[in-house]
Every structure is written in C-alpha cells, then in structure tokens.
Image (cartoon, rainbow, N blue to C red; front, top):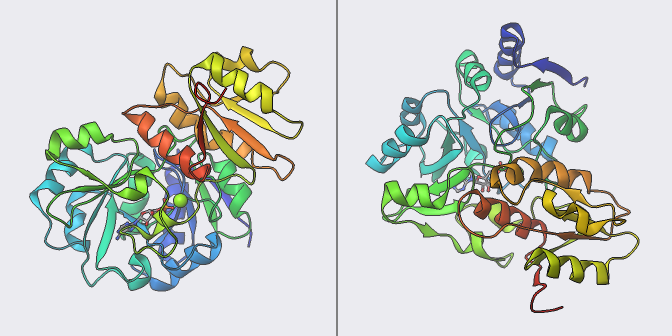
Length: 344
Ligand code: AMP
Ligand code: MG
C-alpha cells in the first residue's frame, strides 16, 4: 500500500480523507494532542485494521472522536450532567470522557467494555473530516504499539508507511501529549490519564476527582484495570530511561559521573551548558511546561535508537501540564526515578 501525504489546509484533501474513512481505510489524523490513527469507529472491519497496523493488543480500547459535543448522545447512555459541563468548558479540546456505551458501538472499538471513551478534538480540519465522513472516528495514537507517540506527520510516516492509506498533515501538535482521560461512570469522577486539561482544572469544575493508581505508579500485569492501555509499557524508546530529579547542578553531577559512551542526556534548554561534550538533547524550557509537553515525544523518538543504552532524563515536577509530562516520562522509564540530591 502506498501511503499518501495529504494537506490539512486543503478542503479537497480533507474531503478525500473523509472518503477513505467511509471506505473503511486508515488515515493518520492531526489533533492538538498527538496524531491519531483514524478509522470509521462504527465499522468493526475498519477498526480491526487499526489494531493490525499498530500491533496493538486487542484488549486496549480506542477513543471515538466526534465533531460536536451533542454526538455523545449517539454513542453513550446515562450521560451525567457533569459530562455536559465538562464538554461545555473543555470541548473542543484535549479531554476524553469515559461513559456507558450504546449498542451502536462495535465491541472491537471498546475492547468489549461496557463503557466508551469519547473526545471532541480542537483541530478544525479533523472536526471537518469527522463531519464529512459522517461517523465518529476511532483513533489511538498513530505510533507502532509501545513506541513514543507521534506529534508530526513525519513521525506517522516513519511508523506507518505502507500500512495505512493516507496521512493528513496538519503540522506539529500543539499540546504534544495524549488527552486527559476522565472516567464518569462512577459516583466520583476518576482521572485515568493526565494530559493537557489539568487535574486542577477538572477539580475546579467537578468538585472531587480520584486519581487512578495507574497514573501514579506501576501496576502488576495481571491487574484488571479501568483503562486497559494503562498496564502496558508505553511511550518508551529502546534504551533504559532513568529520570534524574533534584536541582540542575546536583543532577548534572550525578549524570556526568555515570555517563558512558552509548548513553544520552535529555534535559531542559536551560541545562544544555551543564552537559557539554555529552551531546545533550533539550525538549523544552523548565520555565514553560507547555514547551516540554510539545517537545517530549519528538525527543523520545529522536533517542529511540538501538545503539543508545541509557537515557538520563530531566523531568518537571508539580501540577498543571507538568503532571502529564511526568506521567509519560515515568512510564517511558518504567518508573525508574532517582534523586540526585540524595544519591550523589
Ligand atoms: P491511545 O489510543 O494509545 O492514546 O490510548 C487510548 C487510551 O484510552 C488507552 O489507554 C485506553 O485504555 C483508553 N480508553 C479507551 N476507551 C476506554 C474505556 N472505555 N475505558 C477506559 N479507558 C479507555
Ligand atoms: Mg498511544
């Protein structure tokens, strides 16, 4: 299969991509979070192709992307008031809600769960595409399973060339990490995955918010989890990632002491001078967490090479978007975190 590169600025290309979706083909789609691997979410055969192209385990459900909040009603039932409030405040935007599913959604999309995840993305071209296709678009991140997510059309081409019909190039993703997922099927809303919409913003609107244990630490492989995707190793380059916490000086000292020829350093822009001769890679500024979320996956992909053995990574702490960046880096690191101030 020849993977065509289409342009999100072209009405004609969007219409062509919509036709591909209607025909049951796969299209790489731009969103403000990461690129998605899209298919007609109501067509089991089309959805099955997503799992095949990604090499994704069948028990990892997909998010359905809609063009208008009202479309929630076509896919979900017993929608609580809180869902409409969240939609009004954060849609279109990087928030996914988990709600009880209606029968219209095929089992393969929800991995047999009684719930479905829905999101209305901010990227206008993609909402136009969903409208023209006339169906919700099921889309996981457009990377090969287990690899760092894709935040440019080139990333998608690298992972999916020959496996999918087309990629709609909408430039680099603005947020850069996957959507915030909140489960609204229980009395207390539960955060399943942090993202561009922060826990603070959710709590302000919802009052109470539980944080799923999988967000905070590693969970055993045989655990039954709310979001099955949470149990798999994620976002990971081939090398072992070690997060080095502590102030800049202590971290640099810790890393310089241990650094070997095939290792790599992933740091904040401000810290580049501390790693002279170690060929460091910066993914954003410590002063601006949005630059870190936007740059994280590109950096992890750049360091995804068989010859690299250990990646020493600097990682933001605290709330807001930093919470999502830290969650992704911790997963990439298999939760390996050291504190340079304690372990000099
Ligand atoms: P990805 O497509 O790789 O960005 O991951 C999508 C995430 O959404 C996965 O972690 C899924 O487990 C999660 N998800 C999708 N549908 C549901 C659902 N019905 N309940 C809980 N989590 C879900
Ligand atoms: Mg993913």
